[in-house]
Image 1: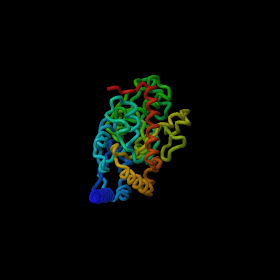
Image 2 (image 1 turned 60 degrees about the horizontal axis):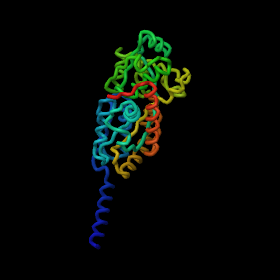
Image 3 (image 1 turned 90 degrees about the vertical axis):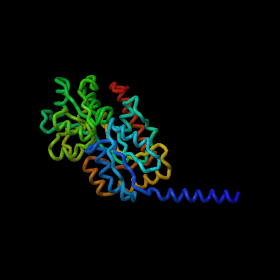
Image 4 (image 1 turned 30 degrees about the vertical axis):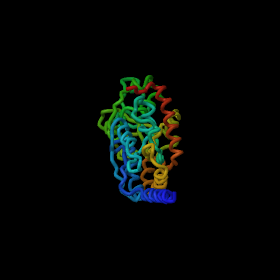
Length: 322
């Protein structure tokens, strides 16, 4: 008994020491969308401050496809040891589950350590477009028809475009407008710039650079208050405050069996990283709001977003069964 007791204590001390050493090596960070999109911008902007908080290199990898599902599945199937983490996004972890009946994961397949960024949506066209206002857009939509780009089928941009057109009175918006899916938010913006699509509705962070350099014209923002750098009316000013529920967010998660101690460390690191002045200034200049949520708050927020979008998907008839 004495030997067993000593052995038990020894094992406990060894386990504690091993845990205290986490992380012992670089951590893989999966970005489930392509370069230039809102998720990629957020992830790479916080990478330096987060790496300093972690004390180990963070290996950023864009694992794209299926509206964020490919990268999400890779993270879900990873070892739950904290060495593979995922940048979660409104599309991959609210809209995708709400729209796709056969999605290869559920919200319960992940352990959410935080949501740290909220950003509004904006609808925009190329600067040389003959569409200058939401009235112009709707006139064209109800006449010859319009097209909009997105970061993929079942993405937040996909739902957002249909949601806006429906709110402004386009009958059967999910089918009446032509949806042109792309591989990521950056590609979706490029599709508008090169004339492949008429407009897109996406996060202000993904549009800010194009708006600032005169390549795109914003038609509307989904906030209650104007967004700095976006000379466009708010949805409320245009009579559609219900569109304020259309927002983007970014968080971090690991596989569902991620240990409590590892999740707690991520909470500490994110709290530290999100106060970095350079990061905050950069993201706020893009219209984002930095607000670090606890794991419990993040889970509740994500579930609420999911339920909101699931109801909307049913109303618009946008469920994807295949």
